[in-house]
Length: 187
Image 1 (cartoon, helix red, strand yellow):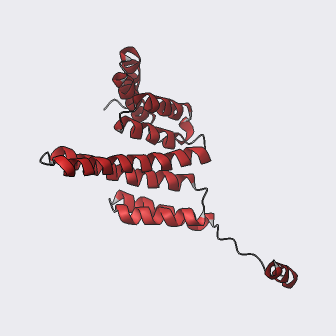
Image 2: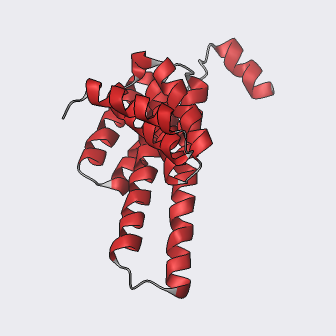
Image 3: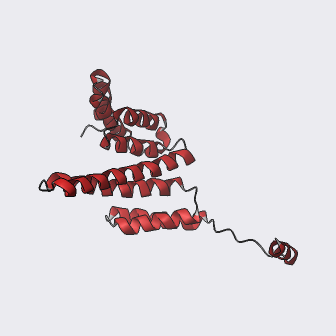
């Protein structure tokens, strides 16, 4: 307390580490690393971006994408290397679940910071589809479509929603969403 009083009297400025510009620069680096599939570097840059600006919703979204890509890579390992059995298969499946839950946590944080962040909601829906939690997936994907301003691909989001509804055995609703997805992206 005494040091604060001395600084106030001496005119010392308290240094705030938040710097949105530096955070944005780190996020750009993270996105570049992610495009190159350099997941460790992308994750580290997301951490740096968040250190400069803990309210950087896009940094949480990109960090969630890093975990989701790790999970997809792990899932490919499970599917391609069918020779995994017993403990190896269990450990790999557990890693997959942990990665998906980490991704969901980051997407959830991004959506909590900016409730209109459609892409974060969409990514949460994809994660819940991968977790085979189809009711939650449908809810998150519907929320994404309700917030299209920051949604990269409404057609793809609709397709994911269609598949979530299909797995819930809501076939008419699923067909409607999948038909609309084809209208958005005919190819």
